[in-house]
Length: 171
Image 1 (cartoon, one colour):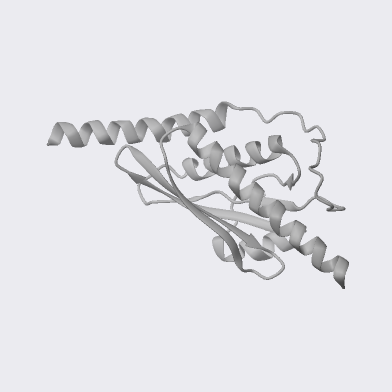
Image 2 (cartoon, rainbow, N blue to C red):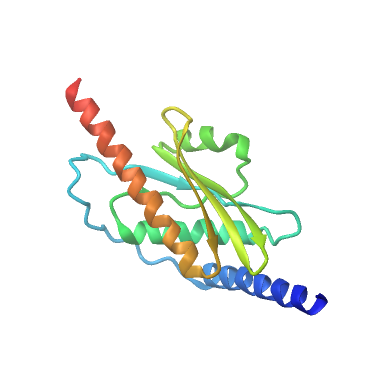
């Protein structure tokens, strides 16, 4: 049993380490305007992604690595403006900080190692209302798994913006 536990723990540590290496080693691409989807939105929504909270005992750089991976993927997919991942902002100040930076939404979350995987909870919050508009939980094992989580969140943000734009047109 000790060998099985050690194997699971080492696989989990390997996953966390690979996420850290990927995020730290990856240099962000030179920003180029990405084509906007035909959504009828006059202006792209602005999003800030905060470093994810990590369980006690886990390297806190993992939370930053996940935020950077999500930011890079959302930026590459286009259609939204993603601000630089902020550091040293307390969770209680996320909404105020996002509003100060004129973000329409912010993304935050948690990461917890579970055996040889990690559980990632991601939340999209409207800065207009302070309400969580979308939340998802995923079991991730690779950097690609983490990156894929950004696409659904991005899709939800764009859908909310389309809804807002159509409501404004009716008024």
